[in-house]
Image (cartoon, rainbow, N blue to C red; front, side, top):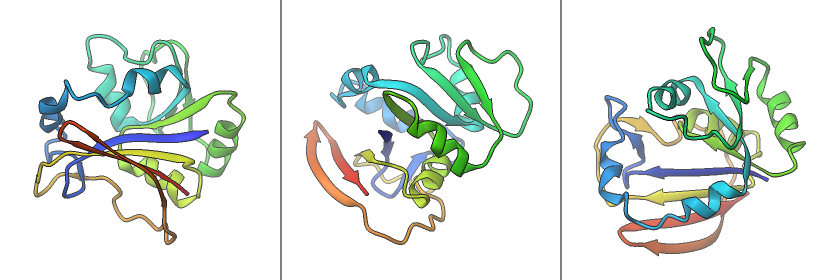
Length: 167
């Protein structure tokens, strides 16, 4: 199963204009179900901006998962278990469909949008915060997906609205 698991402000931003995720800090103690979610993930697919953000952290957060890094730029010192992906999205989706466990499209909305536009996100866990950022990095910047997602579940997790969608 190919999955999205992402948080957004109520007005549709996943990060502030300066790429900061500080608005999420207020919800660090909310139970998002992340520990159970990550146990099911075998492979992480991420774009270059998310990669650069994660590499700046003190520890690599995905040491237990294989990583497919989608980038056209050279990569210095990739983390263990990382494969650089330079092919097209359809071929990447085909590779993801062959993974025996769940695949998580991590981070920015652009890559998740590409999978969504291709009809390849099987489950999207979207966490809405009550914040209004006003500007920043959009959840889905200019999606071409014209169908509707199907709402599967709704949960309240403290001040977070947890919406689960499928195609």
